[in-house]
Image 1 (cartoon, rainbow, N blue to C red):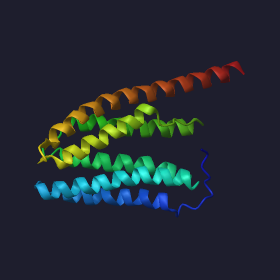
Image 2: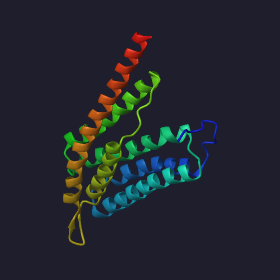
Image 3: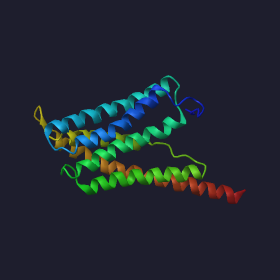
Image 4: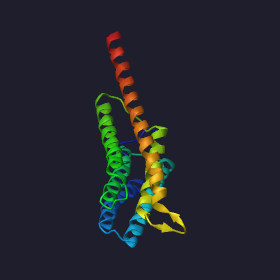
Length: 195
């Protein structure tokens, strides 16, 4: 769907995205404390923010409120809250630092790649693997935030299982993004030399 940059950015989907960004410092503050209560509250807040991600996209498409501002801000909000939560989990010894470096580094690299693509007059759309990666990352972070055992379920073990999946899919989808970008560049070069 083509977004209309002239549409007002003051709509419900964009407000939900801004709410998700506002959740980032709250999750960070809660993770300064390592207790079960603060972990539980951080997980609930992260889960609520994740639900707004599903809701804002649905509302934007359903009510035809897709804007350029929203298309830019929505993936940025996702990256901010996932990256912030993962970084805060390192000093709590809930996730290996190298896994966080892989995930955050990939997000920064793809964001930069998209910026270069725009300057070259092309766009790189989110792939199916990219969406799957976000699901794995979200479930992993939720499990690691809950951390403790609830109803006989070891939340940390669940979180680490999905964290491994997230790392694998993160690397694979990143490779696909870069490969797609190089193919587009090669096609542009061939087109320009052929004309």
